[in-house]
Image (cartoon, rainbow, N blue to C red):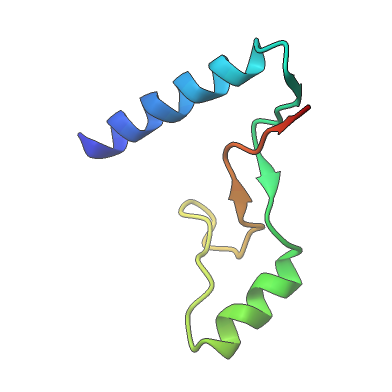
Length: 70
């Protein structure tokens, strides 16, 4: 239930920014770092790098909303 609520909030924010006259760029997903960098960080922290839930392969971690405005 909480996950669905979070998704709805993120979708609302995305659409709000998408149609704002002040927003220059609003990509839906944005890579945080290169895959190799996040693997090194996870290893240094002693954490398992999160895999894709379907393929079990390591994937690039992304941020859902990043907005550039003026």
